[in-house]
Length: 137
Image (tube, one colour):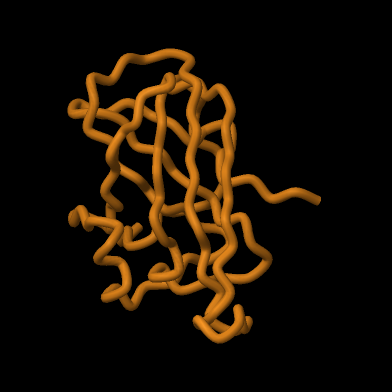
């Protein structure tokens, strides 16, 4: 079974851009600090992203200071400031996941590279019981 980070309802428009809600493509919960170097492309354009944690937006480089966990059923909300338009978009995301309990050699824990790409429709309704990491709901 392949775990994907981009579910059907991952992309939505906001007044100031998009939110891309990533699912955890791993079999166990991980510290949020294990999300390393996320990069988003929408319709072929690089789109700098911040991580939404409730009412805060955090630069991905600052996640190492966050004590939160990314649970298997939850999503990490990446906020992309861009001229958003509703409809279908080609979305790509790449990142590394640091797995603190697996040895990656002399340089530290295991870091796994991930890359996902697919067409997403901003109008797809959100389904399921997942919540965003750092949200109060």
